[in-house]
Length: 110
Image (cartoon, rainbow, N blue to C red; front, side, top):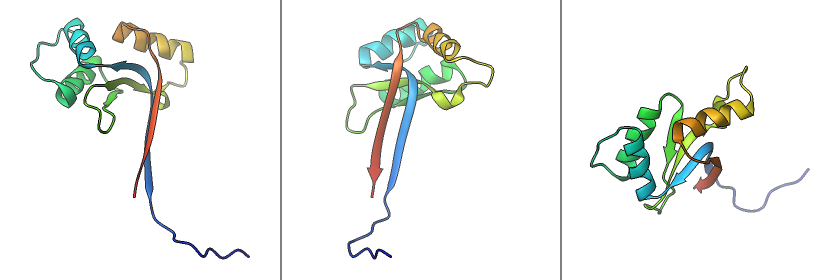
C-alpha cells in the first residue's frame, strides 16, 4: 500500500469544447449585423444576444483575462443521434456564415 505524504488539495477544473468561431470585437459586430441584431452592446452582452438569435444549443465563452476574443458555437455533446459530424458542422457553418473549427479551453480553480 502507498501512503501519500504530501499536500492533497481539492481543486476543480472547468473546460469547454465547441465547434464554431473565435471572433474579435469587429467580428462580433459583423456577425450581429448579419443576424439582424441592432444593438449598442458589446462583450458578454453582445455575445449573449448573438447566441440567443442563433438558437438553442449555441453558447459563447470569453477567455479569462481577454476582452478581445469570444468563442461562439455549439458543444460537440449536442450532436444528435441521427446526425453525422459533417451535418453538425454544416449546420453551424451555415448559421455563422464563416469557416469554423473546434475550440477548447480548460482551467483550474483551487
